[in-house]
Length: 402
Image (cartoon, rainbow, N blue to C red; front, side, top):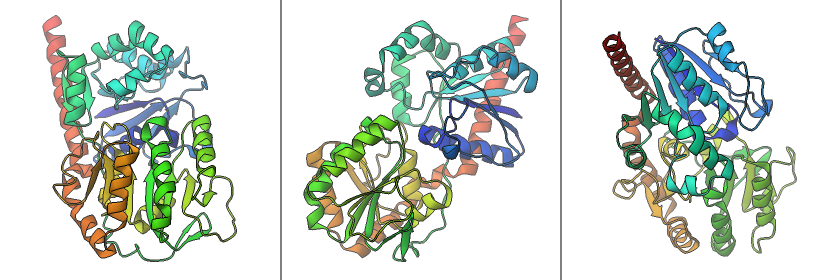
């Protein structure tokens, strides 16, 4: 099967949608399918995510906000030809509009994953430009697709409210199940040449206003003296202005000894209790998961939460927002729910950090129950089943027309 995956950016700051797409695309390729990525031009080559060599990646040449490229459709026609299916991730970019037009011109099924961008919270905080785009073309573009892809039952319900007559399929993000049995958790760990000799609680993901990081830092400043043996690491990237706000906010905190690892590679020794790590990919990211003891995500909402799934795969107990689709976290005794406000974050952090360390490890072992159904091979096979179904429906519709 010839599959096009379409996403507006392959820069690491695009977050969970990109990393889940990477896993599913590479797994589909290993299952014998012809996989092509079409995307906008990367602004920062350093943070560009790479793919297996047998996957063709096509970038347009535009750096504009919506990555507009007038001849993008002609490039697709001349260099790719006609695929069996197009799978789009995210909204609000010209490449997504072009993929939809391309699919209609060649009668190719088109499945779109909104990736949480149609949650009420996301729409309410959208720019005026996005609201105009929604009115003039984005909603029509979604209606013209063959199918919408929800990452969870929670997102399915939200999409159904907007598109009650639309076909919607639920396909969770795939996860790389780790064989880590916690043996590295107590070993010496270096983050960008800084030796970390404390227990680690961390967040990794997009640095964005809806992720609750200001509330987390505010709480950390209030309780950090109670837990001198712990360090909070915040890893990830986002829009430069908001990253600067988080850094400045951390510097002003009363009890936090803060280090910005984004600025230096070689540093002096220091008894830091908060580290802003910047982007971590590949082995750097893997080492952080392996050496940490607790994961936290106080996000206002998540349609799936790729970093939550990754933490669970590394047998880490998690502290996560109640506004996520991981409803069995407390039932399976592998973490805690929080309401994303400072009072609740503080209460649960004090409870979790005050637990016996071995008990935390035991909770982490329970996490494997949460992710057994998200193995990348089984999810990739389910995606192919959905594609085949959409292709068959499309053929039936075309035969009736003719």
